Image 1: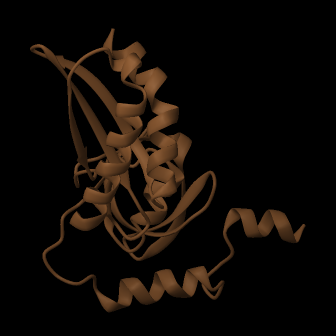
Image 2: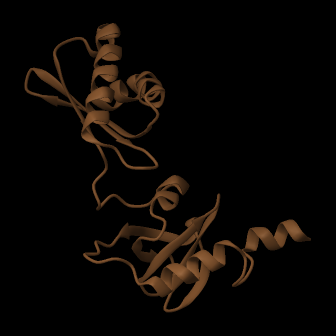
Image 3: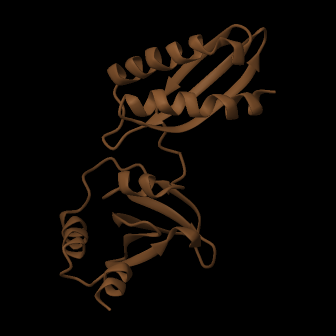
Length: 179
């Protein structure tokens, strides 16, 4: 069963990806005719370049070959980086989206667009209509990066940088620490 196989392969593949300095974002194994398709999605703080994808591909391939008894047959390996339509579901996704515009669908209220600032463990600072606010990950149904074809407005970046340095207002976590 492919999902069971992915579960067994995940720690092995994650170790190889992390050894190369990246994060395993997703692992999927599907039957594709007589072969299995092993799809590995990797990400890093500065993205993933083609040379790095090739390096990771060689490392993962070596791990899969060393554990061929788990795959039990021929496979095709596909190593890729996440697309721009990947939802922001983890703190590291929000951290990597810093200064990017994001469309957010909250658990309550209307969908809105904001620019991501600092990302903490449970929430991110987001600039929405000129105001920086905390957005709790638990209160987000979906968040996806919006593609921009020009540089972010300097004023928005200034507001987020000032917020990060504490000159606009303290985050909820900083307020908790000061008590």
